[in-house]
Image 1 (cartoon, helix red, strand yellow):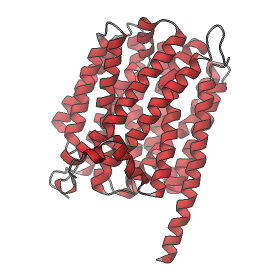
Image 2 (cartoon, rainbow, N blue to C red):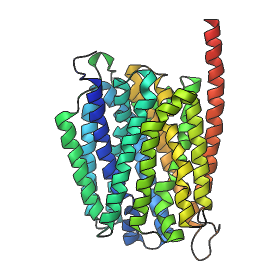
Image 3 (cartoon, rainbow, N blue to C red):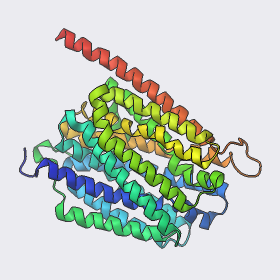
Image 4 (cartoon, helix red, strand yellow):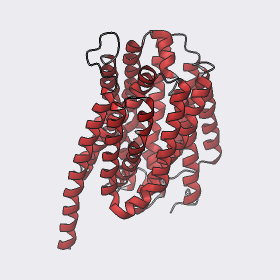
Length: 415
């Protein structure tokens, strides 16, 4: 192992803390961004469409920038990419905090999409310092760190949002700056020089990066499942805050509190439960259980008659946390160490396509489901559609797992 690498446990601790700080900063703004949009745009229906468009813009920037950043991290290392992202996010949140009009929000969300693309590097970092058989647990720890950030972030955002819709953005900028300073002081490099790959625009553009996902049958199938997972998940940033306020009369604090509970459940699932379920069902079986549980939870949210039933729906939805780490683990086992950044860039591009399409779809569905004369008089319709997409992902995941399990058995018998 290269002398650049410090002890693996210390490296993992550094990357988890840095990731958690970034997510805290992102989670702070969730309860209040729609309120800031309404300050500029007006009523619920129009705000839903604009909020969906801004989320889609964020994802569009990630689509183009994630493969570039992933490939740059394969060439120059993970550390500089993570540090520059944290610094960029700090600047971006300050920009939004002082925004005088909607166009400043547009620019801010575009910058956030670029700088947040370094999440690809966080996953690549973990692949660098973790053996293949332990990656489901390692990615579960990243998910738990993200969830811890979403516990603190929305709670703080809801609390500060009661003071002003702009106050959480100042806090988010401060936390992103703290993440930069912390990483600058202690974050070690994880990618040894001998495992680095020359930068190539052929691989770094999003369409070139996606070619990697076609290099193996299981990789292609998992990429499709990954798309469906992210597509469904985007129902939350697209319409959740507006939906909860419209249907149940929830305030920013109520939304922040529920999101904190969701984050706590997700932290338990990904930090503690996933490794145990993987020992029992394997990566593929755990993935399918997680996708199916998420579909049940989303359906219950869309059909919940009151806020109490909606809150209870987060229990089956918590199984969703089993899917992401196992999908990531299965995919990393199909590429070489020098391609981990490229793989994560391709994965982020897939997620970004979902992030471009889903908010527009769900924002539009919500807009035609509310108002004085709605086309579809069911404000929970977006959640029901998300549940059906995730259910289809579970079926595809089960099919891919079954086919590749048989192929591996055949290969073992031939050997």
